[in-house]
Image (spheres, rainbow, N blue to C red):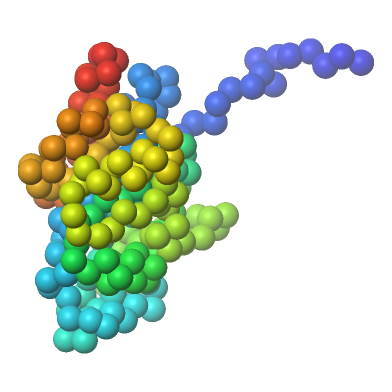
Length: 230
């Protein structure tokens, strides 16, 4: 017997999680194929080659790491959820481009820091204890039983270009490795001097106070504007 297609059985795309901004939800204009992040003062609030005194030691939940002085280092609050969502829900390739003089230390930190799945729509972003205190967002992420935290490094599926030198060199390498056209790339960085990558056709969005969902939206809007998707 041939099964009739009904309104309930027709194939429809699964809705994206509610924490992803509407401007990034379908149906929307196209999204970049590759999003590239600087590290220092873009994904995390420090210079990895200046502020920490190695070695690092990961916290028990791997949401932060401390150096030998006891100082704690972690991502900006929205960096983890953004990384988790780009590849998993939005199918966008992710890479890092950093000119740090401590590339191995940066890689060590990306291995130590875990990214937790953002809270499900039915869960709150924070939990309240008996004393009225509010738990961290990272703690509430554990409510997603189907998904487990992953090393931050695992989310950079398009590559880690972490070494001193020109950001243009970083992007030339990413282009060669991925085959993705420069005008399909969006770059987030906190230093205006790195706009020189736009000579290749890359769109750069200047981040003032670390990555946030708002910065991500604004960067995507600028990329769409340059591509004529307005």
